[in-house]
Length: 406
DNA sequence: TCTGGGGTCCTAGGACCC
DNA sequence: TCTGGGGTCCTAGGACCC
Image 1: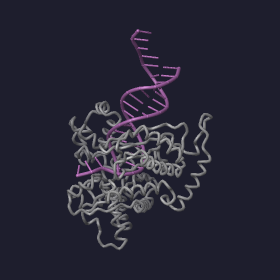
Image 2: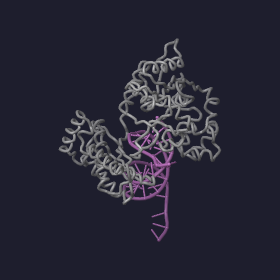
Image 3: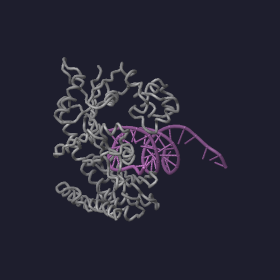
């Protein structure tokens, strides 16, 4: 039996949600009605477009592009800051409504959900009607619009929700693939990104239809597993389930683009401490420990380098993460001007299912206790107020900014 | 024009073992 | 002296997503 899948995608999520917050704050201007974007702080070199209004889109502004470029396209563009804690709340509100239809919901990102309604529809219901109902309810109860994709698997539902926007329901059933999907440029296919498009065009694949009709073996030979995925997606093949059960994260990282290039190893180490603290804190919150630590840097000319280390025994202690990170950075930085620095922890294991072999280093119980006490304080009084490193990070950024403004 | 931060997954080469 | 094949683990880097 065919599965009944919906993909719900909030239209211009960050911008819509900010618009609602502003209206709730008593402001009268709805920023959805003007050329506006949500963007990072340009003075901190975080200046990219995070979301855009439909009016901004009409000027050709794209998510992810530098704000400076967006301003060139639209001279009276309004730029607003984001507020992640508010976004999380709006996302949770959306989820609560969707839960009334099925508990098989995969939160694919903060503004996208897959829903599996197979076996959740009454004899007189249709999947399409449910899609319209969900869209209408979200609009009237939450005040923002969504697109809903209706299909028999996740890939097709997702492709469908990406058709014309906003506030629309689209179907993409198997018999509609040639007319609705194969006519689209290859760049529109999920999992075909910036780097693949030119490679595919070079071998004559310009539309999703071109990809679908290509020889699968040829694509696998040329692009490996990615070739297989692209071919299957182009043909509307996707057997993956809606992953509605909570899954532990597979890696936890923290990185920051610095307000200016930093050469000084001492300063970089201070930032590493703040990053270590954040990563360790989040690992502990999830009851996870990391087996591998990676330090990543990006130079001023946008080249990325990374060094990683497999640990003798997994950890979630700030001190251990910091010590390893410092070593990794020492071999990495080589007096390069550093634009971005980050720490990733991976090969995570759950604390309870961890097994200590007799060769493993003894767990530093004293350090564990110290960091546990600090965690409790952070949870009670807020992260930034308690962590010395967190404060240092903030102060450090502000210092740089002050120097810039002088 | 000057490019965020959070993730997942894959690949390729080298070390090492049998 | 010149040399195998298979497997696993580790590391660096990169593609993609939102």
